Each structure stands twice: as C-alpha cells, then as structure tokens.
Amino acid sequence: MNAGPLAGVRVVELGGLGPGPFCGMLLADLGAEVIRVDRPGEAGQATRHPVIHRGRTSIAVDLKHPEGADAVRKLIAGADAVIEGFRPGAVERLGIGPDVCLAANPALVYGRMTGWGQDGPLAQEPGHDINYIALAGALHAIGPADGDPVPPVNLVGDFGGGGMLLALGLVSALLHARTSGEGQVVDAAMTDGTGLLLAMTYGFLAQGAWEDRPGVNLLDGGAPFYAVYRCADGGHVAVGAIEPQFYAALLDVLGLRDDERFARQRERAAWPAMKSALTALFATRTRDEWARAFDGKGACVTPVLSLTEAAAHPHNAARGSHRRGPHGGQEPAPAPRFSATPAGDPAPAPVIGAHTGDVLTAVAGLTHDDIDRLREKGIVG
Image (cartoon, rainbow, N blue to C red; front, top):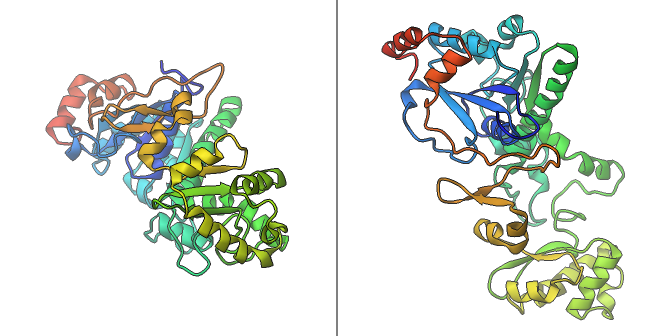
C-alpha cells in the first residue's frame, strides 16, 4: 500500500492534459492509488509529462470502443473516485458518465475538470488557461499600469484554480462518502476556481481599497514597497516590505531612513517618486549583492530566482522542497507535509499501458483470456 494520508483510496483518471493530471499527481503524492487510462495507440511509449504523471499505474484502453468502455466501467465500479477532463457530455456519449457509474457504485465521487464548467453559455467552447483567467478577471489584474496584461504561465487557471480546486473537491466529497455512503459529482471549473483565488482582491475592491486597473495597487506592483526591481546585472529583487517594521528595515539597508520622500509609506501620491528613486538605487548593484545586503535584515527582500536556482537554494535544499526525478531533472517534492502519515517518495511516471493486464484482472475482474482478446482487437494496449 502507498504511504500518505490518502493510502487506501483508489482513483481512476481518464487520460487528459494539464489540470486533471495535476490533480491526479497531488492525490498520488499523498498516497492514493491512481490508475490512469491512456490511449492504446500510445502503449509502450514514455509519457511526455514525467513529473505530473508520476506515482500512477497506467492502462491503455480505447474508450471509444464499447468493449473498452465496458472494461473501464468495471474498473470504476471498484474505485472510490474518478477524474475526467473532457468537454461536457463527452463521457456520457462514451457510456462512462457519472449517472451510469454512480448507479453501479453509489459511493463513487466523480470529479469533472473543465475550463468553463458543466453548464453555461460557454460550456462547449474550447479554451486554455489564458482564456479562463481572462474571463475570470485575473489576467486583467496582472501587469504594469502602462503595459499589457502578463500571462502568469498557466499557474492560475490550470493548476491553482483548476487541478488543486478539483483535488480539494474530491477529498471533501470522499469524506462525505465515507461517512454517508453517498457519492456525488464534483464540477470544478477553472473560471470558478480563478474567481475564488481573487476572493481577497474582490474584498479590497468592495471596500474601495483596490482600483479596478493593474499596476496601481498595493499587491500588483503599484506600491513601491511591494514590487520587483531590476539590478545592475539584469537580475531582479522582490520587495515585499508592507508592514511598518519591514518597511523601516528596508529603508535602513538602503540608507533612506531620513529621506523625506519615504516618510509617508501609504500615501499613494508619493508612490511614483518613491518608485523612481528605488528603481535607480537597485540598479546600482547586482542581484546577489543586494541579496547579501538584505540577508538576515528582516526587510522582506529576496532575489528573484530562476527555476534551476530555486531548486538549489539553501533554504529549499534544507527542506527537501525539490527532488531529483528519474528523468534526470529537478521536480517538486510532495506537499504539504504530514506528521502522522508522511507521503512516500513518488514512483516514476510509468510507461504508457505498462499495467494494463495487472489492473484489469485485479481490479476490473477481467480474465487473461478477456485481455488477450481485447489486445487482438486493438482495444487495449
């Protein structure tokens, strides 16, 4: 059995991209048995996503063939949860939708990951992270006051507002199912999740403490004491000196404690002059020189690290925040950490279809003859 707080939970993940697999990774990292259903045409190949596909078993089944769908229905009948990320109605057309699966397994939690949700005018429209966060209001809020919105990689929609939201929804519904025996459908939409991530921002907006435009507010780079500055070598430092004691420490290190321009921290009219002065000052030293100057000073100033640098930083290294993956590169370690049920070391992402026979016999109840017949038809890989 896997190690972690979700040990003993079995999840069937219907193969997809991005947020659905990320949800599967999170659950597998925490001990769940996650069985990923891939396409038989890809059987025997290494996955293109070795990090977010880690910790799984993989079976290769043609869901579009009735016999393939039947095999997966039997698999789901022995599962605690399902993850699917197709457009609304797609799994119903395949015969493996929530109504059918819940009829056979009433305690099942059926997790559905989409961009727009299961209903609404845009439910059938295609899209990607950038589209979902655009309509949710987040993209508009990210970027300089005099520039264009900046896509925050695909962290906000796909992963924060998508896969992580679905993981929370699944675990919540699993708790309910364990106590009541009642399964349900979890409708996780990236637009909904992105809106949820904006909860504090909407609160500020309602209080009149936030202008509905980017680059002029406390937490969007508008405040000179919460911003990113370019250094002499082209690197950057991140300044987050919001509270008075951190702001005072910032001014002390910079030699600006007696500068009248910085006497009124929260006066917005003073921000442009303050930011101009800080921009010029930070440009006089390299990033690492500033990092050494602020080290231990309690000013909330840190270097902006690259992905490679972040994995090697002494703090992250001391906590084991990253691990060397079997693919040879660095990858994030499982999180969060549990005192009583610590997670184990994630298994490498499997070769696609590597566990087809074992899983379909042990979990779905198929015989070896059944599997051989399905292989001859190309229904499983």
